[in-house]
Image 1 (spheres, rainbow, N blue to C red):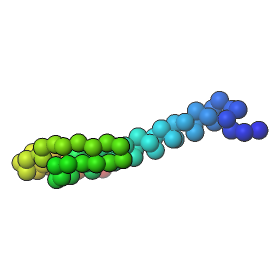
Image 2: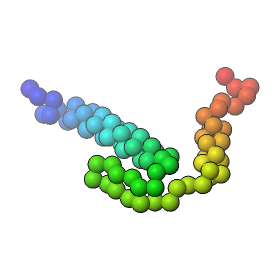
Image 3: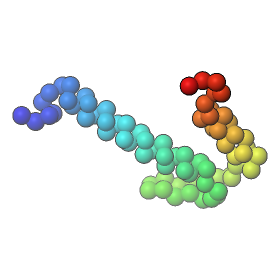
Length: 75
């Protein structure tokens, strides 16, 4: 009997595939956003864009570092 005949297993497989696909898309979009290129081509997607200013990139990195740093005094 195949896994596709059991409802719980097909939901598990579909969720795992969706999570992997979402992770790949998130990684690609994040890499393209941080890129310093003005012309981007990825698979069937291509665009010409303005590059973000250095001040904006530094501010975003500081914000990300604040979020990822644990609060002092907490375990």
